[in-house]
Length: 103
Image (cartoon, rainbow, N blue to C red; front, side, top):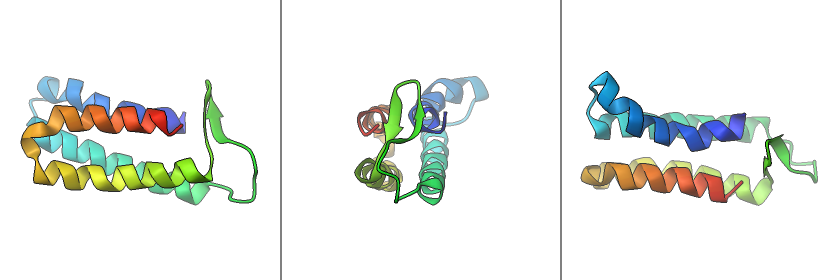
């Protein structure tokens, strides 16, 4: 379930922003910050001495290299959004799809 949140948080910002009447760049930035915090939580819970996939749930799992790529993606996306706020929807979709690729 921990990994599904990384995929669903950016998508949730796209759909919840109009319902809550929050500007999309602001909702996207909050979503990306929550994703970054969640990825740091995964780093803290990760056991580097296990040779198996961790946080496995419904076919998703993560290993050490994928974890680094997830954290890098979660770190870079808020920076990209601050540079190009008018590209919020493509950036949120890109973040969600990249998280899915790394699992």
